[in-house]
Image (tube, rainbow, N blue to C red; front, side, top):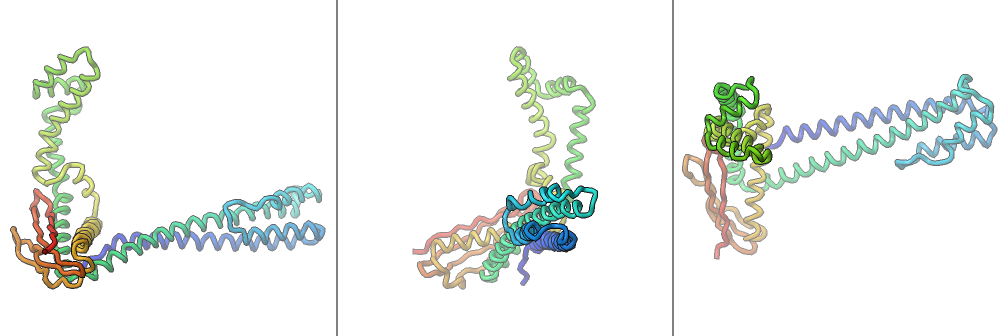
Length: 340
């Protein structure tokens, strides 16, 4: 018996974690490169600065390497600029360039450390999401086989329903739009389109004339007659054909089989976990699922019925399924009652 897992969701999150870790590795390599460059520049400056100034500069670099804040340490940074003037260095000589670039390298190290913190925070967030998924998967793994089978039945039915909409509804949508364009050509001026709509729906023409001195009400008459036209020739036939609105269908048009399945697995697990929570509220910690069994329901679907026992009592479970055809997505309504 298979139990679906949200592989696509997990893979996406794992890919994000790997990307952030790669970014951290790059920043650490960059920091090492800058620290090596500073070491060479300090060696160059060692014989040019007095012991106190050199010690202060080297101390600043050491402080920066250990500094763990979003704010640079104040004071020492300005000394690198002051030392250029103090010793008469210029940007054109190697000592002046070394001092100027040490300051730039130090700030680059700081910015890289700040970025690493942000990358790590993102990794922590994604890791939390993975843990939540694993916890839900663990909860589902612990439920009896009869519930898992029921969940998979729902997921399979939802997959077929959604994929049918994705594959067939775009062509139906285009045919409806083509019919609408025949009746109200899109290349006409809006005033001409409105006149054709009024010929189709005279009641709106009467309202439009009645409100000829009220632009606010006229605006809503226009809006209502357009909605009537779109509802009659697109929205109503579309929902009758596929059981969902155009807006709902659009969300499926660009999804792969794997993406549709992943969304339905998430929904299926939630249905089962919600059922377990509802039963637990009646029974307390569950001690036996043995009284729960699958039976054949209407339309050939399997439904859940029976008694669940817990430390605080018993609960009767009765599942009602509806839909499962092109015009209605299969949905489950499970009744849970305390057994006296």
